[in-house]
Length: 411
Image (cartoon, rainbow, N blue to C red; front, side):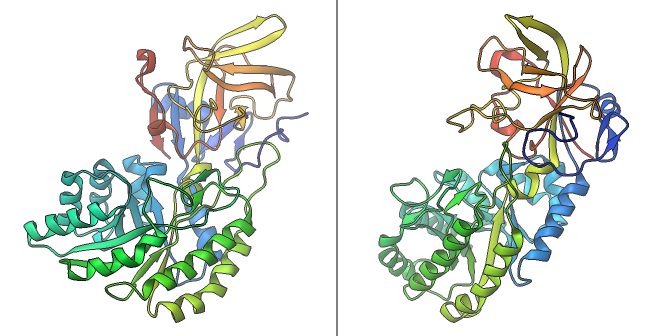
């Protein structure tokens, strides 16, 4: 087996120069010298733009594309995305600060997530962004804070529907959830909002994430629009915006294939007349995080030791689960699977051996790749973990065991 045809999910075209992977057009070893350290994360501007362009071509023109900042809140990435997408969704006061430093109009920013503090709500109200309220108590808090500021707060209500996104990597709706207000309570809640000093703008209905089955996404989108249309008759004002979430997945593991965007876009186009008939003038927003940035990023670490133990080869690197929890399999995986990996300094070399790529931490959980076929690598070679642009650094326990934090660059 050659490394050009690895047993892993399909990869975006970063490019190769000789034996070296290119990231942002730069050979990975030279990029390591430029960063001045390993490990590091690197995100490719071209691939970010390509993914947004791919979506624009597939989706109906009237659908707005928002970036869920939680997927990758690196300020340089967020600044870059501000020029590519139509809006942002944030999930904390820290993310709010990051997006307010960009050129994104505040009216195109929304703030979701349960448990917002009064300080966070106050900052959001003052900034004039849309607050996706997750509970009845939060709606009242937004109204009170807005009144105290002399500001009419913009509120969309997050709905916990009675359906879920089938085969989603992470279920965000259906059954008891900390997210949103149960659909069956919504008529009463919407009626009670009529007397509050807030501006009702619409609904946020997010069913699940990381789905590679187009038919499941289509079904969830259809049910979302029907539910929003039913609730619109109870709303205190016309529904201006319906955020239907995202759910679009990327391939991480062997056997997974890319989602067919053409099918998703065609279905949304077919749903637009129905949405307008139920909610005249409504603006449909699709909110994506991982799908926009996940495949544009890599995590790069250096082999610091090579050893054998009872017939197995271990490449010990200076990176690990403290930087990339998801790749270690400890961020939601039930059965551990390998993220796509390569020896970034031996891209054209044939795979010669089955190896375990591990980190420097004193725990058997610190595994980046297990029994994967790779070219022979020695001390100094660079290991590249692909599909690392989302839920990487900020989703990892960087303080664990006191190792230094990795670098992070946009190229």
